[in-house]
Length: 298
Image (tube, rainbow, N blue to C red; front, side, top):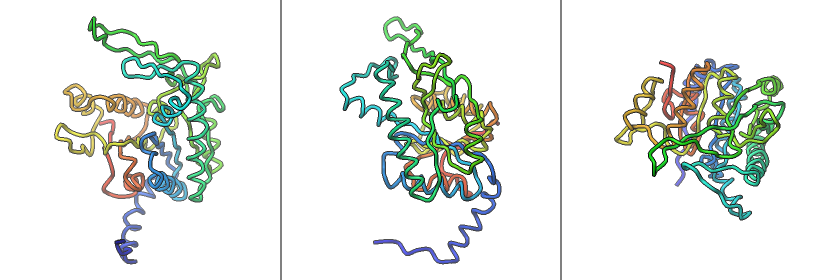
């Protein structure tokens, strides 16, 4: 049974509450990292596209950076390409990086552009290679060897990290009142293609663009305490303390490290939130309640 539509008075109250937030973010750059898990549901993807279009029409300058790990995994399986993992991370060889580029800069990127277009927005699909937007270097990762208990360096192949970010392309796209949708694939200084972690890539973009907000849409509500309850707000110091005491663990640690990286490069605040919640972007930016964990400098 459908719930009744809100009355005109309720709708007006919603607009009144949203207006100060819209004014605060007028002409502000907001970088949104759209996770591979968050984009799995079609209805949620359409809600996300509506949010992005509304942000742009409200005077904000959204930049979408997307992932696609689950989709890459499915395509590798479909093509019969075996994946090797070291320290829980996928090794990217020449065959794998071709699939990564095809899936990220191809099918997923254009799918998101299509969703935004269907909602009345004007989006343009890009990747880090375009205009040398992002120049990558080979990533250096370490892990504790389970046998020797010593830290060892992992060779992950063609996995890269952002080295330089040139904002000229993004500035030009935003000036044309288009919405950039960016895939985390980049070239090295030697022209080699690298697969870059989407969180890290988005954090580098947010820092280079001086974003007012950097939103990481994922598949969890945000940072949780040891009782499983959402922590609504943290400082960088809080984050480091929660990592040290074991509250923040596993895959949340690199996300937090990306948040700290972006904050130290001038981003005003970062938010980790659940991309599967309908209109989570609007709830975070245009209401008093927020929708995840907000992290500030201090």
